[in-house]
Structure formats: structure tokens, C-alpha cells
Length: 113
Length: 440
Image (cartoon, rainbow over all chains, first blue to last red; front, side, top):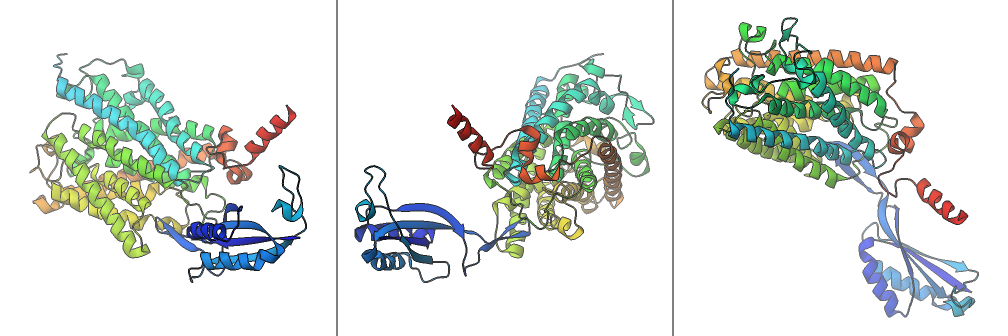
């Protein structure tokens, strides 16, 4: 069994999160652009005096597959590296993964991590 | 008839005509950047097709309607006089400046084209391109050509017209009434006839590409030097006066708009800068060769602030003038046309206007010129609004204006032109492409 650690973070924290994960021995990850909001609740933009509420703000989603035993430590690494202390810093969560297969070799489970 | 060619004036007017023609593609991008990504091609096409239709109409009968001999007491020019541009060098108002008639025809064509294209911003995102094409042909014939005749073609608002007899010769150096008040009042009429876009006031309709808007505004400013300095019809000091006023009034209007929105909304925006540029250009147009630098600064400041405030009116009154043609062109045109009554002075180079006009209120001319300007502005507003409303209504009853609601939501580009501007606008094209490859 392995775990999927997903972090939604501020775009400008990506470089720090990446380096911290690499320093913690993580050799692969998936990064994608995302948009959403939590307590931060977006912002407003004004065009020729007309105000638009833009509630979805840009975020980065970082996904890392890890062995069961490493999950808690990796969550801490991401939280620490993504932290600024302001509203909008994001969230990190862990879900169990039934199986993982490496496409190139066909290996399964922890061998595929 | 004797005709003495002035090569300097002729070269300058040919150059100016080319500069003004560039303003319509520039306007296409100024407008195109302000609409949503799913409508940008349609917005560009409304300007480009205006070049197509008006370029043809002007060559066949449009010029003759505007600059032919008086018909119906100066209501319009005789359409047969120069039909198909059968015209000699010495005919036409520019011959006195040593400019062959066809050069003046071309210069005037570019004004007719952009005036029609300006209207399109009021009805963005929602009308059938075919109805728009029909409208452009009818409008330039019925509304634009007569008004151009009144002001520049020797008609009712010219030196021999009733207003010059009753009060004074109205000053419209480069098109405050003929172009901007005309387009702005027509825009108001058409936006009322065509109705609001689906979701207007509820869904966000943000400009999809502000760099396009800035690029368009920059090119408009560039082309406008031909518009204003070219309208002197001579390469002389008054052309230089018009050029400098076009620079300084526009600069001040941009700063004024930015200051107004910084105070009101908290930020100086790129859209505000681009809008302020256009507001200043519009307002200085009728005044360009007839005010001092100080007059130009005052007109620029007034237009920047007043237009920045005026673009909010549509929300209060509930009409969907999508890209603020009313707030910028009608209001800016009125500001410039009326303020001439305060700031006009024959102390600047002897512009040909002062043969029949008076100094403005601030230069010892009393209120005569001010009243004249107000009357000329009102005449243009009423003429354009009433006739455009009638034309728009007739087209609604026959061809119909609006695309289906689903097309408006899905994207007018795809519905009217079978194209999308950007790969990411719809996913349909991607899937169609993939499924074709899978079948192969």
C-alpha cells in the first residue's frame, strides 16, 4: 500500500516546496495549475468602474506518491515549505492508494514508487 | 478650370489618409481586446467589414452624397454628381489648397469608415454579421453622408448655412459632430434597439486581452495625427498646431482618467490609460486647430474626468453599451464640441474657420460661439439618434439583429464565422481533431 499526498499551495511557494521535497528524498512529483478558493475568497477587479468579483484564484497542485510509512513526514515537509502564515496558503491531504504501476516496467506496489 | 497643384499639401493629405485608414484596424484591436475570448473574431470582423462596405459605398455614391452640389436646401449632396468618382482634380473643397479631388475623396473615405466602425462597440457579442453589413451600407448613406455634407460639404451647418446666418459658423475642425457625436448617438440608438447581452450585469464580462486594448489605443493615437493634423488640408503651421494639441490634450486626458479611477476605485489601470487616450483624442478632434496649448490641456482634462465618470451611466440606466461608445465618443465629442465655445481663439494660426466664426467666451467673443456649438451638437445628436433608431428598428423587423441565445453563450465567433480565436476557447475542436486521428 502507498499513499497519495496532495498539496494545494500558493504559486509563489512552488520552488521552495519542490526543493524541500527533493531534499527529503522524493524523486518524482506531478505539478499542475489549479484555481479555487478557501477562506481567502478571491478578490475584486475593476474595469472602467465596473467591479467584478473574481472568486477563483490561481493555485498550484502538487501530487506525490509515497510509501505508507513516509506519508506523515512528507506532509510536514510540504506544509513547512509552503507556509507564509497568511490566508490562502492552501491545504495538504493524504489519501490511500490501492495500487501503483510503473508504465515502463510493469512493476507494482512500492517497487513502482 | 484652373488647378495649381501643391505637392506639399497633396503629399501630406495622402499620408494623413493612410494614417487614418490604419485607425480602423487599430480600433478593431482596441475593441477586440475588450470583449470575451469567444467573441474577439466577430468584434474584429465588425471593423474590417466596415472597411469593406464603406470603402465601396463611398466610391460609388457616398462621396457624392456628402460633397455633391446642394439638394433639398443643403440637406445632402447630389448623388449623381460624382457617382463612381467621375471627378476632376479641380472639383471639391480641397482644390483651393492645391490638392486634387481624388486625394480628398480618399481622406474623407477613411473618416466615413471609422465612424461606422466606432458604432460596433456598442453592440458587441450579439448581432448577426449579415445584419451589421446591411446596417453599415444604409447608415453611411442615410446618416453619415448628409451630416458630413452639412458640416464640410457646404450644407446647412457650413459657412452658407442657417446656423452661420443666425449665430456663427460652428467649428468642427476634424469631426466632433460628424464622427464622434454621430457615432456615439447612433451607438446609443442601436444598443436600445438590439437589447442587452444575455447575462449582462450578472455574469462577468471582463476584457479578455488588455495588451490588445493598449496596442489598439497606441495605434489609434498614431493614426489620429493624420485625422486631426490632416484636416487642416495643408502642410502648414495650423497643421502643426493641430498635431501638438492632439498630443497634449490626449496626454492630459490619459492622466486625468487615471487620476479619477485611482481616487474612485483604488488603482490606475491599463484599461483606464487606453480609455483616457481615446477620450482625449475624441474631445480634441473638433478643436484641434482652433485652440491654444492651454485650451487643449483644459479640453483633455475635462474629457478624461467626464468620460471616466460617464462610462458608469450605462449601469445606472440599464443599457448594454458594451464597450462604452456612448460614454467615450458621445460624451467626449460633446465635451470637445461645446468647450470650443469657451476656448476657440483666432490668436492661433489663422485657421480658415475664423473667417465665419467668433472667438470663444474666454477670448472675448461672448457667448455667440458657445451657443453655436451647443446648437450644432444638439442637431447632430438628434439627427443621428432618430435616424439610427429608425434604421435599427427596420432591420430588427426584417433581417433581425440577434444571434440565438445558445450562440451567444457558446461563442458568436463559432456561430457566425465557424472559427475560434484561441485553442482553449472551446474543447469541441480538440475532440473532433482527436477522433479523426483515432479513425484513421
